[in-house]
Image (cartoon, rainbow, N blue to C red):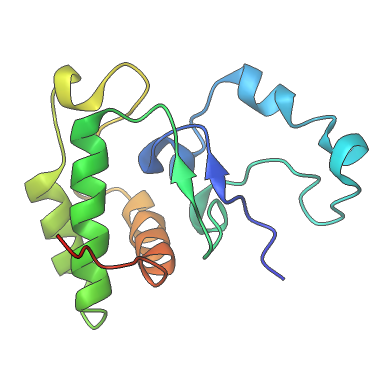
Amino acid sequence: EDLSHRFHAYGIIRTVTGKVDVWYMKKHETLDDIFGVDTKYHHRPQHGSKCCSTNTISFHYVEAGESLAFWEVMQKVNQSPQMSDGEIKEIMNKVWPRDNEGLGVYSHGLPGPHLGVWDDIIRVVRKISNGVVTSSC
């Protein structure tokens, strides 16, 4: 059973890297009392490839630039699931916002090109892209 979260308070980069605010982590400390015991994660957000359920529904605190970029990446991966990890990384680097206007105050930019967190980011993109409904517009 996938007990990873489906609703995320932050964008995908902060969610995967686990660089979230302390208040957010503390908010999850009492969720066993509210939702019942989660013996695996105790409802605490996970980072890395465990952060996001295959049934992820939303990311909040995300500006339009990041939302549009992420949607484009997910659409392309959904349409071409055989795409290599390098191709996914290349697309993300091409479309992802780099300035404060596109990222907003809550989001973090993409990691440096040689950081290992890319493996987790790409794993999560692949995982949640499977459930993307293609745009009919």
